[in-house]
Length: 144
Image 1: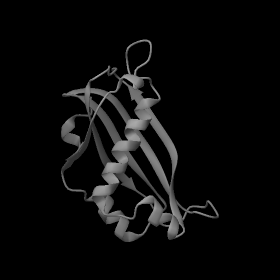
Image 2 (image 1 turned 135 degrees about the vertical axis):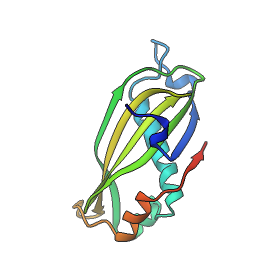
Image 3 (image 1 turned 90 degrees about the vertical axis):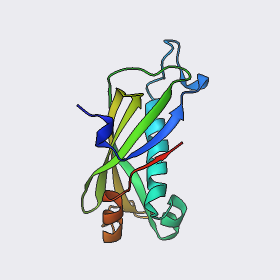
């Protein structure tokens, strides 16, 4: 089972009222938004080009696949720690492992596959070697 020790990068956020549904838990689709925010902060720590710089260079990242497994629900005002790590880097894509914790309780397990592609042709292109190294060697960090 996944634990906090499986991650070296975390992004912390607080659940807002607008993110909670009538069942008084975070609406399921919002967990993907949380993953996106945490991935963005993870990316920022790598020093790799931001989305605008990528576009200007003619390439972009596209989400190819997103998976979530719900083990528990978060509620209004909960403090969540979102663990992010690069699990695998292929020739044209990479897989990110993400998990959401409330304190040490694992609530959500997920993964996202990103494809590096030519922005115009929307076809996969090879991930630069320098990116591979940075994605797999992110130092222990936390952001909020």
